[in-house]
Length: 237
Image (cartoon, rainbow, N blue to C red; front, side, top):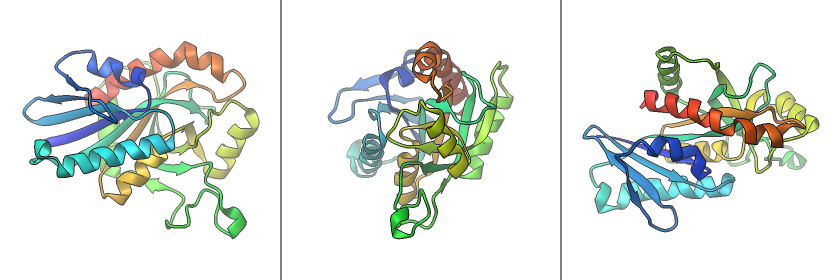
């Protein structure tokens, strides 16, 4: 049986997914979750809370739980999906479009003062954590099978513990990391999954342009972005 773990940073990012029914909610500490088993796939859906530390803690918690708990004795995680909203770095993206991260990085990781490349954690060989090509292809195929009014782009997603809303910071991320979009959790999920040799997918819907209008447009477009994203992730599964 395939086991897929889906994590959103905020409750509203997963609500459309679980609202269709069939899920059992388990109010356990520190991460309550929804579970659904259709005989072929076990879905586990949870909320990490915002930020890289919260996401890393959540991912490792569930990897360890599924590997060690008698409840999941016949399971191992086949894929971890981080779904949610993001700010557009690329001018080619509009609100409601979706970005698949084929590689993830931390734009606020900086030990350049010690001679390391900007964005590089010294304990790793690369600034970027790579998504398996087969996982990216799975999303492309799902997108092609849908009748949509939004664009799907594949490229770098940059993560940091910052809500990006200035032109200067947006240009910094684009020029240094060639990122399509920015958010606050994906790279930490990618790092933990890589450490545990677990396939991962970070897929984000654009809620704002990461500019001076970002706070307003984020609230206006967040719901539409999540609806688009939920439809696609369900098709992937």
